Image (tube, rainbow over all chains, first blue to last red; front, side):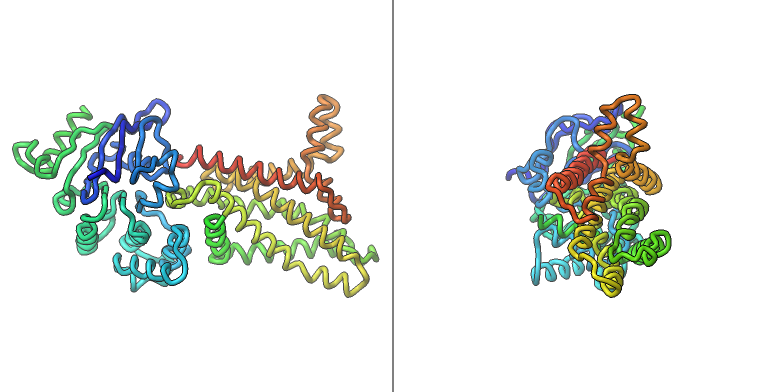
Length: 243
Length: 243
């Protein structure tokens, strides 16, 4: 099966600081890739490059065969992206906001209404759909960001900390949602929560200091430490690099 | 163009989601009214025209238009929504154009609401309404110039106060560049600069329009001015996206 996400030799330097250093990996349909690493390891920068928000210093990234820098609009059409912190327009209501992103994605009329209603249902936002986003709690705001990323049923999902700020029940819902969609999409999620890797990911990548240090299934990753616990593996991989 | 209009529609609605729209329009109308009737001696002149109204218009716009443009990009940057906007499947040019169109439409609305001046002067005498229409077109073009200049400045900073102050200063410069005070000063040291200043200045071209003279060269000038700064805006957004 051909990869929906292709990343080849991707690097990003800010001045003399190298945030992402020559990273390569592919994600195929049906895979859920957990993107792990300490704060400042380059997770968000990599995802931003994939989403076309940060221009790579070198290397290439493709979504469904479209290069994100030279063919950005086509690549972004196939992508659902939840930026870090799930930014949304605070003065808009949930429904207006989703209608706006739906229109930008080319929907209109009845189809637009259906898409918005479907995204609201998926993320269980029915109760707040007419509220301005600024009045919502952190968990709801995050789900509005998620709804925006799912609205057009994209082939590729890139979610930067999708469960951050959610309560345990909401976390469970989001994970169930990801599991349901997993078969038909290529998904990357970044997270600090290692149990999430076990719960939803078919594969995990660990980066630290901008470098890729592990790329394996969660089970194979756990084998890398005598305790078989992901926490210990994570610490071993990322602290060795930092030292 | 469709995407630009969708962005414009969202932006235009956002003026009305906050008190910005009301405050702007009320202050604009109050200032124009006070200046025209009191300082401009509208009644004592005993002439059926809107010359005092149009004389003060660029100065009021100079003060108020930067208040509209300061938030255009600076706020997106502060809220992080710029990441959302630029990872939607639209080009930067469409985003820039959309924001500009929204602000311009808003200025047009504010100008439209000055219609009581036109009614007043028509009630009192027999003005040349073609000249008045021409003046309004000039006012709209001046607003467009200030908007594109201010928006480009807004794109370069996260701080709205800086965006406002710099935009007022820049708009002031392009307005007064052709006054004898500036050109005489420049002519003394470098005559070439004085010639350039006279060419790029807005005031003379606008004043010609308020007298009912529309020259093709002036229209080309206004169009190029607006497009040039919209282009600068796009370049700045492209370069400083993730900052």
